[in-house]
Length: 180
Image (cartoon, rainbow, N blue to C red; front, side):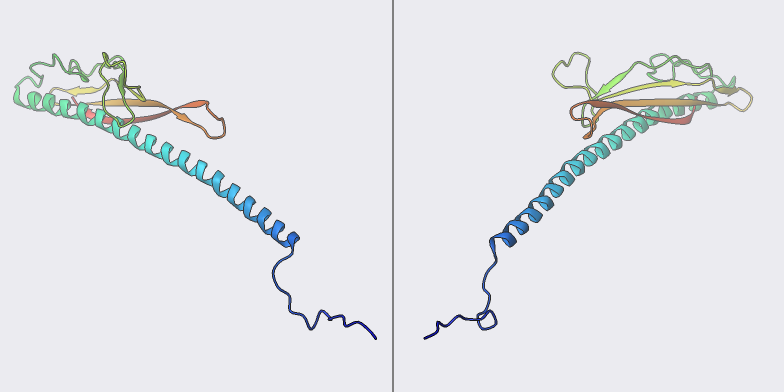
């Protein structure tokens, strides 16, 4: 008597072999590691974009404040027959409205959300530093107008995922002509 041996054609295959399962798990693991690395870079780039946006906002807000002081000076210049402003004492940015270039402005520090930090505050960590200066301007007494270029620099430290914990110093510089 002969033994019955089923042929592969008659028996349906069911399930996976151990080698197929291990290969599928290896491919899945490599994909998950790639997604994890992508997540780290995505978070870093999002944070960097937020910091750059806040820095640009701070630079433009300092320029807007300087421009508003310049509008006051321009109004005084128009009101006076000699074309000169009455007073500029106590102004944070423009100082004397004589068209002479001003020295670098005192640094002002801001927190992560762009709020100014008081010098006495020893708890809030400073993130942004804004400095400003102006170039020599032109005063035309006859037409009672004056313009001066105003430059604002904002610096901050930003993490680089390729460097680990090392921080890179980043900066943005914005300028505008301001009526003085």
